[in-house]
Amino acid sequence: MEKSAIIAIAAVVIVVAAGGIGFAMMNKDKDSSSGEVTDALGRNVSVPENLDKGIVTIGSTGPLRFASMFDVANKVIEVDIGDITDNKNGRAYSYAYPYDKLSTETQSHANNALDTATVEKIANKGPSLVITSEGIWKNYTANFEILEKQCTIVVIKDQQMKFMTGDDGKLAEFMTFNINLLGKVFKQESRAESLINGINGIIADIASLKGTSDKNIYVAGLTISGSNPLTTTFPSYIPFDLTGSSNAYKGTSTESKVVLTVEEFALMDIDMILIDPSSSDKISVQDSQLVMKNIYDQGASAPRMYITVPIVWDSINYDCALASAYVVAYFNYGGFTEEQLREKVNNVFTVFYGDHGANVLKDMSDFFVGKSTANGQVMPLFKEVTIEHDSEYKFVAA
Image 1 (spheres, rainbow, N blue to C red):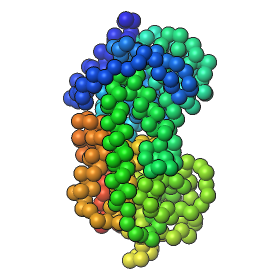
Image 2 (image 1 turned 120 degrees about the vertical axis):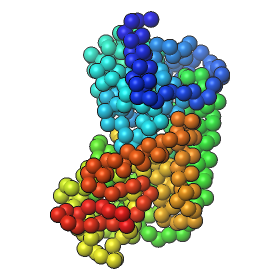
Image 3 (image 1 turned 180 degrees about the vertical axis):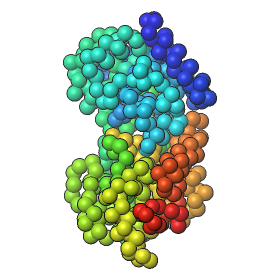
Image 4 (image 1 turned 120 degrees about the horizontal axis):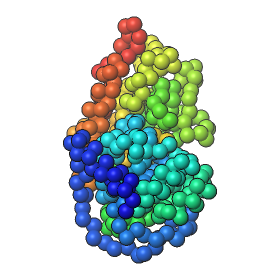
């Protein structure tokens, strides 16, 4: 084993221990796999005998997220730098595992990239496995072809921004493909099966909560390429699709996000607003302030506003999309209590991360209370807020 790989793996153990957070075992999956898998590019890849030299993930659009569903976090030795430096907004797996304790100097590389220097650095570590996605491979094919001479590389399918289910209402093929592929690579096939069954169970439960509502719901301040003002929304929002709810945005944009003008916002027919708490650091910017003035000036006729679970960074965090779907169902249809909402959201995270998911909701809630307070806002998860005006507009408890 290369000395640098030993040091990198040891660093993971040291920083985790220093943070007081352990990577306890999810379950001891004793399944075996065939010696070879076919990845998203149709490449035949030999399954590593073990992962003792560590795992490297390249591309913040999926590899670390899917890997985190399995019991391999203690093997992760290098990730995109954003998975370390800005990993809390909308990344539930970062509450399940302390990836922010990894070293940016020795255990990270540029986001969504594989430059020549990174090829050399990873090759010198000699990891057991490198995981990337289709889009990243295609952007850096030549460098990946050099790296695969030194390391086992497996390519998963790209995530989708606009959907996570297929025509049958169950988990979409790209999701099941990635989960099953990594289940074989990690020799945790039964874990893969339980993940797919568990997520399909959650999707079915969300579908059972659908009611009748004519409310147009605006989702504001979403996290995509950083936090955003209240004028930022999604033309397609998975929680609306899963719950049969109506998006107040009726445009035809094919982009991942829409940035409205304040005038466009004012013309929309909005009955309810769901706010991503990651936007608390953008509440003081002009566009957010003008949106809040518009709402404030409506007085008693203003749409009611609630804080939801953040779901996005670069692409979709599907655990948070499911958690947000429960939030949408709760506020749009009712029929269950806030305590039951919290139980359902907690179940999402335990399905995705096993025992590691038990404290995700609490840790996420604490993080966003702290973040919003630091920005002079009151934005607790699952609570109604209203707007107060002093020197500027700000959110307060309803």
